[in-house]
Image 1: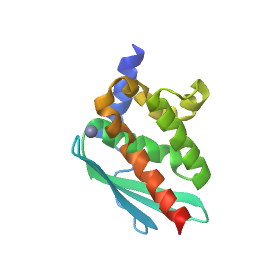
Image 2: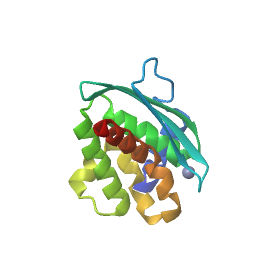
Image 3: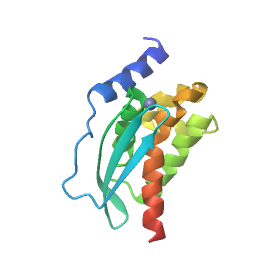
Length: 144
Ligand code: ZN
C-alpha cells in the first residue's frame, strides 16, 4: 500500500469511528474551538487532576481532517501530564509548519498521518483546530 493511501485510511478511520467523540461526565474544563473558514467546530472536554489529563473527549462537527485530528490528539494526550501534552502540541504544530524533526513527528504516532497537510495551506486550520483549543485550555489553566 502506498504511504499516502495508508495515511488517508488512518484519517478516514478516525473520522468515521472516532473513539473519543463523546461527552465526559465530569470534565474540569470545556472549550469550544471554531474554524469559520471551513465550518469546523470542536467542543473539547478535559478532566485534569493534579496536572495530569486523566480523561478527554470531544464533540463537534466539521470536515474529516478536523474531527480525525481531534480524535488522534486525544489518543496521544490521554493520561499525560500537561507539560507532556504541550510538548506534543508543539511537535504537531511544528510538523504542520514543516519544522519538526523526524523524531518529533514519530512521537505523534497516528497524528503523523496529517503531515502532508503542511502542503495544503487551506486545510491547516482544520488540522490544528483541536490542538489549538487544547493549548488555549492549558494556558487558561496556567493563568489562574
Ligand atoms: Zn475543516
